[in-house]
Every structure is written in C-alpha cells, then in structure tokens.
Length: 239
Image (cartoon, rainbow, N blue to C red; front, side, top):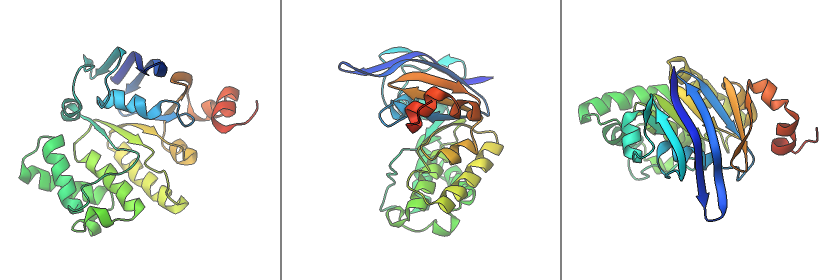
C-alpha cells in the first residue's frame, strides 16, 4: 500500500525553481533514500512533505488523502514525523523532557502516556543513560540521537530523516545505522536524505536522486549508484 504520494510537486523562490514537478510514491514499510548534490532541493522536498513550506503546484497525498493544505502540526498528528539537519533541541530541558514534549504536542498524548513513550524511545535510541541530562550539553552523536528520538516520540508512520549521519565518525554512523535498522524492522516507513552514502546504502530499499529540483534517477540502490549520469552529477566522475 502506498503511504505517501507526491504528484507534480513544484516550489519556486522568485525565478529559482527549487522543486520542479516531482512525482514519487513511497510504500508502507519502505525505506527510500534521497540523494543529490548540495542545492539540489532535497530539504525543500522534505519541507513540502512535512508542510513547513507550501507547494506552488501539485499535490501531496498521505494514506490516500490529500494533505496539501494541512499545516505542519496537522501532518505530524496524522503520523508524519521528521528530524532536521541541524538538531535544535530545547537545550535547557532534559532529554526526557524533550521527548515528553514531543509526545504531548506531536502525538497528542496525555502526560502519563507521554512518559511511557519517552521511556520506550530512550531505550530504542540508546539515550537512557542521558535521560536527565540537559539536551544542550550532549555530544553530536547524542544530539543526532535526540533529534531522531524526538521524531519517534510523535509516533510517526512516516519518518523523514534529514542528513542524520552527517558529521559523525565512522563508528558513530554505524551505531546510528543499527538503531535505524531496528526502527525499520518494526515497520516504520522512512525517507532518508543523506550524503554518507555507505550508511544510506545499508538501509535503503530504493534510491531517488534529484538535481536542480528534478528527478535524475530512481530505482534499486546499486543500479542507481552505477548510473553514469548519477556518477557524473553526484560524485563528479566522468562516465
């Protein structure tokens, strides 16, 4: 079953067309990897899915219904959760309080329900030992984990991950990938923008490559990475 579908989605800023008639579908339980050079329009695509930015043309469908005009909090309540490229937790609140806030306002849970959700997410993301620490004092790896955890605390069916492995060391990226594999195993659908290609390839069922806001390639990950045009545009390698 298709969970998310974009139909000819467009977004421009003045004369600059950032998203140019993107059409794609994501099935329940699938992990779709998004690749593209800097400035290709990847984060804008996420903003259009989450409702942070409104489309100029086209349609966004989620669970078979048109959500194009829904606001971000409405899409979050419907089950679209996301992380952001630069983690911005409530720095003076504890890790646990950050998750309770996400569960209450993102998933609409009661405070008691949110406490339970926070405990589950802490265990799932390896943050239990940091539960009572101020979020602003975490290492980069744990800030990335918290960004993931806050999205999970909203109880998403669809999880949007924006460069969550960016800036991590090789061992740290491997730890994060293992946690994402566990999340995938319990059926959460994911769309993941990432420049750490080996991390993305270890999890993605399919790749979608964009350049200048348009689809460049789509398909099985290894086949896409061997596509001469993808190699030229994304990796700077001549065919």
